[in-house]
Image (cartoon, rainbow, N blue to C red; front, side, top):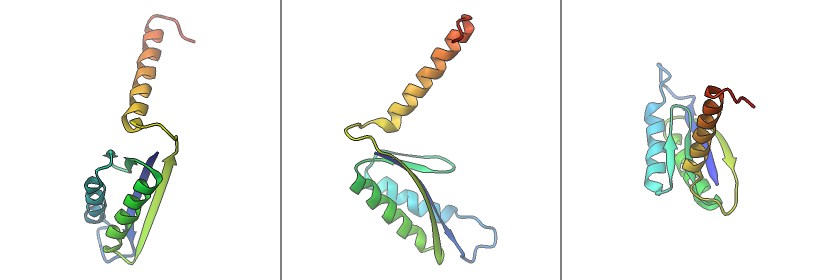
Amino acid sequence: MLVAFSVAPSGGDNPDGSVHDAVAAAVRVVRASGLPHRTDSMFTTIEGTWDECFRVVKEATEAVGAYGPRVSLVLKADIRPSHTGEITGKLERLERAISDAEQRADSGNNP
């Protein structure tokens, strides 16, 4: 399964609204987990079993909890039993589809 999640503190005493220290604490948890992962400007995506992924999400949420009295958690899961390597596989298939569409467009064979 893939789980994309975003976790951030709220209600703390941070006048500039920055959450980078709290997010860094969450990302450290993810990296220490050993699960395949990717972090971008909005979400961190991890790949593993239900138990592995939700353990990491829980630990990351707890790490962020140290930075404020409330924590906001957003997550999305792609559950595809018996598939692994999807953290890169999905992107590879997407890039291939884009390339194929561009080649068709360049050759004048639009579907």
